[in-house]
Every structure is written in C-alpha cells, then in structure tokens.
Amino acid sequence: MTHDLEPDASADPIAIVGMAARVPGAGDLRQFWRNLVDGVESIRPATREELLARGADPATLDDPSWVNATTVVDGFDEFDAELFGMTSREAEITDPQHRVFLEACHSALTDGGKTRLRSAHCDGVYRSGGFHAERQAASRDGGIIARPPTRQGFRLPARR
Image (tube, rainbow, N blue to C red):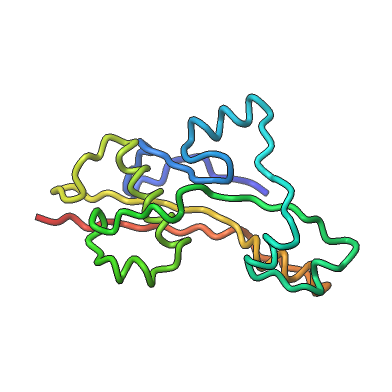
C-alpha cells in the first residue's frame, strides 16, 4: 500500500485544534492518557444480575466461553439538554450514546478554543469509532465482521 504524501492543492486546508474522548474509565483525554501511562484497567468484573439487568441473554451468560466483564462510561445520565437546544423530553428520548457523542463534540470544540457555538467561521467535528456490538454478535453467532471502523465528518455551518 502506498500513500501520496504530497498535499492536494485543490483541497481546503484543515487544522486539528481540539480533541475529546469519553471512554470507560476516563471522562476526558487527559484521564485516558493518564490511565494508559499508569496501566489502569477499565474493564471490570460484572455480576450475572448486573448483566441481566442490562439486557444480556441468559443463554449467553451460561456459555462457558462467556467472560463476565463490562465497561462503563460514567456520566451518560448527566446530559445538559439546554446546552444543545433540546427540551428535557427530546433529551429523554434521544439515545444515550448520541447524547454522549454530542457532549464529546462540544468538548472537542471547547478544547480547541471554541467558546461560542455560533460564529462566522465554519467548524467541523470528525468522529471515528468501531462496531463493538456488531462484532460481539457476529462472534457469538459464529459470523465474521469484515467492516472497518466508522469514520464520519460533521461540518457545522456558520450562523449569524
């Protein structure tokens, strides 16, 4: 595989000025890197009752190859609906993963020095992630997922 490292003269220049992460055991990038340096394990044992309460299939839990372990992203229930122009009802019916994603986008923008959500400039947020649940289901069912991680770009239009 070869990569063309020459800049494309027709492409708009970009600059990565802010980053954010919300992962198990770390609510931000500083804690994430601190955990890596310190060797912190963010996977923890889970009880059968806890996994059942989260919707796990009892037959899966009885499988001898199943590992009772889990990860938790803290603060998923602390969404500030008003910050994102949502009513409390809209926030309530929005998928918690999407709420965490919105908060991470906001964190990335503020990390980059963006203090107002409205400006004359165009700002964007790029997100990359994997299909953990799909890989889990495929491996459980004996299938194979050959899909690369998702990469999405979002461009926030300038508002006046």
